[in-house]
Length: 128
Image (cartoon, rainbow, N blue to C red; front, side, top):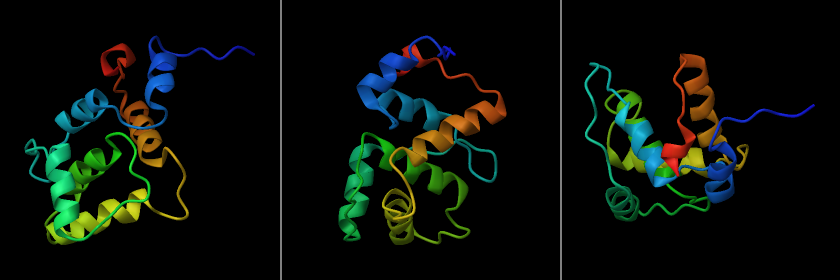
């Protein structure tokens, strides 16, 4: 049986695999809201790198913009609740991306499934 893929999907996968490109990350983060429903002020890749370095956190699985997505998602969903401060945010990024029970592409695939579940289309050509 032939599998039907959305336009641009194969090209995205050939360029980035199951990881966030800069454009995909920016689009995903632009949709994030905190618990008050307000848009977050996004962390850039440079700010995430600075935060990780400041707290002595290094990643074994640092692919594309995955760490930037995870840091912003954590900031939007958990900061001030189960994640009390920046040091714990840095550890959350490491725990999720370097999870020994995880797999390559875990964060990206979860995001794509969330999009499907919420009925949010991904315009793959725009993410390349």
